[in-house]
Image (cartoon, rainbow, N blue to C red):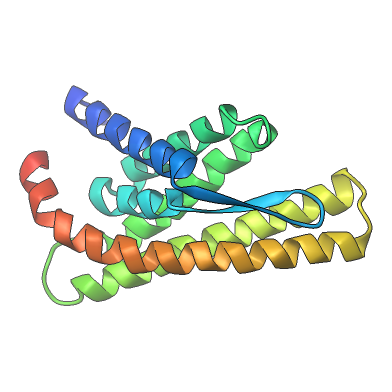
Length: 183
């Protein structure tokens, strides 16, 4: 039987959705590439934090919806919104799944591994989508696509490393307070 979602849970998802959106929209630096552009941003920090604080499913929903809202409000990214939802959901879901469980032995390790696995999965999904889109849908020359994907790989890797470095300790610090609120 399916568990009903409570108003409290919907509220937590909404708050984290807003945090993901704000971090994606307002804490960013746009970087042009050979074909389009990419960004350094803090949205991935909030996506991982959503996975830590809300768990895989609810964190995934918050990460996916907040990131998708950013795409839907930005003409440069609007066409990517469905992919963004799925990719960011996966990022937070993986993070929350690995980091979840009770406190105690290995909690810090699980947080770091969860954040790294979620961030890495997102980078792979994002780069694969970029390659397929630019090469096979738009038909750009392979050299231009490889140049763009390599530029995006550098920026996405920086985003991933920053997200892990910031989100894991922040998640650990917020964990006790969030556990109290969620009880």
